[in-house]
Image (tube, rainbow, N blue to C red; front, side, top):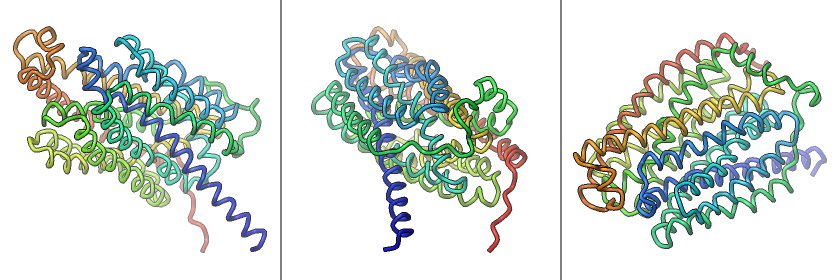
Length: 448
């Protein structure tokens, strides 16, 4: 074997290990983030919580931590080792997930979930920045999608394994079992992944100020439209992640293990297929016209919205599962690709900060505002359906037939109402398509 061939093989092997290991870290990020939704009904029954409190645990706790640390950690990633940052935050969110199982009250559990939020704050910006330095423009969407597809694996693991542990050993055991494996991945990451060289970035002293980053993205209509649209999509996607298992338990009378399996098929598998296919399609379409990064997600949302609404109306969980599978695949297909195209709108030393700002908009709007608003609306509509003092009567009688019917109806109608925000996302993505064509120069095709 020639020296060149040996080098190519080593490079390919290193690239595959990079995608695999970072994908597994992303998987545990999602496992530890979504286990609260899998265990949500068990926690609600044990601690006597409302849907608003579940929304706070699954959404606002992350958003507050992200708001506090997301931008500073992204700025640190412009100057310091991104591999080291990802390893450190992976270890932290893993420990905080395990500690969640020891929480004795809503307040203690909320604090632990805020600690888990450091993963969302420190992971994505550093990862997107590394991908931009390790892969050429035409392969970035595909590379990020190859890593992001592990999010769907994480959702399936959390729903099936987590659901089984919750059903058989309780929700506290589930937090412990799914929190500790991340520590092993953090060590492997630190020991085996080298820090990529920054492309055309100069040295750390040339890193633009955060004010310069804000001025740059504020002058980019494409960045603003994409971020706002992704935030609206996140309201539906994150809300579905958080409340789908409670809906299956309340509306269809399934146990948590059964609901977790349906979640894995109709949501996690759909996300996996949608993310991977969307990333590949974005690479192919984007080489021909960068405006497809806006048009394609808008077109898929036009498909996803009616499927989503009709699915939630179904009285048979089997039909619900089929329709939600198609809706979720369409809804999530282009989110990873959109994250990568925003990197082309800023200079190299601004990439981690730009990714953090985009993720901030998506996470705060989707996971923070969306989940809390959905939980609040579910409680209000459940109280209307119940007709009496729902909070007092049903706080510790959640298995009572009347209380369960009211909570199921309230959550069902709240989730249907949340889907309306996708209309705004469609408009914003179409505007982004026009802006992208103005802001990103067309690269002439390579000579044959």
